[in-house]
Image 1: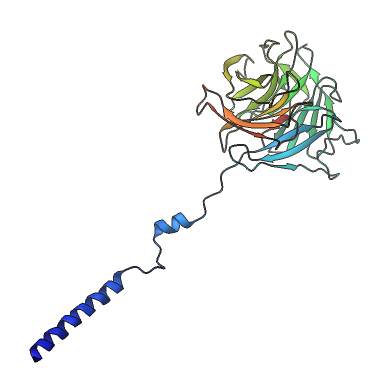
Image 2: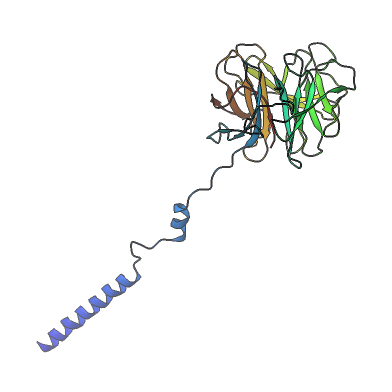
Length: 313
């Protein structure tokens, strides 16, 4: 009997030891593996495009400067006025005269200087080059025509690889419809590239990628064709059809627009339109078929004001 009791007690001791061992090695409910910690950590914020936006009020013709963050692909889109010394973002000369119907804007990051353009009437002053740090105190100079064409300047942009400033010169007859090179930052000259483009191409947006590729959007109605322009000759190298509408059903056949290429975040073209009598502004980002990553397209309505140009920050 004593031997049986000893055997039973030995068995109980072994069972108790096994239970204690299991309790020691089993992870408790508060332990967390490195994988679980990584999954629980907040995801990094998506990279959003940042660029400047030139806006014109259709009712008054007054011009305004905004900074935009975001796009349809990476919302939200925030639009912030770039305020000057008078507490407004309206483009005004240092003598107090408003710039009416400005047509282009560009930015030089090394000096924090903006350059802009005006075109033919109703732009005022007509065909001038704008220079400013403060949007409420703009220096103006008449564009100096060095190549004998009829001037109608718009959509200025700086090539970040060379510092060269390009613009559209809109024309309804040959040889006025073309890409021109401005003498900025040193002078207000307008220098023609050799080639001119068909007047049937309504050139309404110009951008230069961080790699120095120049693209222009030719617009008709709601659609656009993206033109790859040779920066030496001004001729078209390739033409790409944009994969979606760039205006929301315009009240005019040839709406104004801004074109920007975001080379840092989404690697897409961004558009915004100006239509004085049409629906709210349509913002898009996308890439046409034929370019890497295309065709892709995303629209967003009503987040921008009437847009005539975009600029790289």
